[in-house]
Length: 138
Image 1 (cartoon, rainbow, N blue to C red):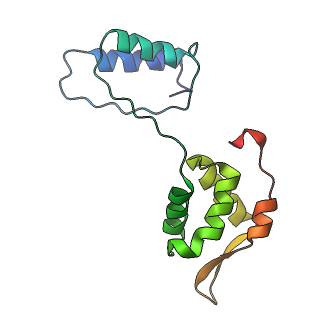
Image 2: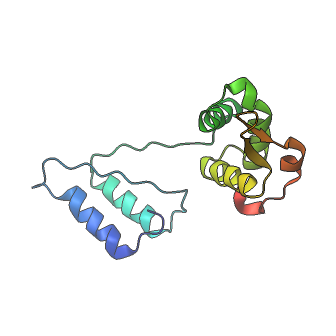
């Protein structure tokens, strides 16, 4: 929602405040925004008007959670993916979006590949750790 234009935010406002609509669920997500952002102003307005809502704040993944996600993605036991997930977590600080993008990039660059011979994923931890990422990635 951080990219929604003011007119779209007004449409959402109309839908969530319409007393005639009895069964309506709106799910929205956004990254952190500052108080001057149009979405922040709209959310404050809805809160002021006491529109029923639930806010769920999601943080970054822990090292353990990152390992669980990586092991699930690779369909391997967490003990087998620890070196990879540790390197990935150190590079991404557990940000889910950056973790997924980073995994894709190391796959695309051949730093992680599936071995048909061994029927498992393999990776080069040292090369992954030396990989540069953008400063604004975390």
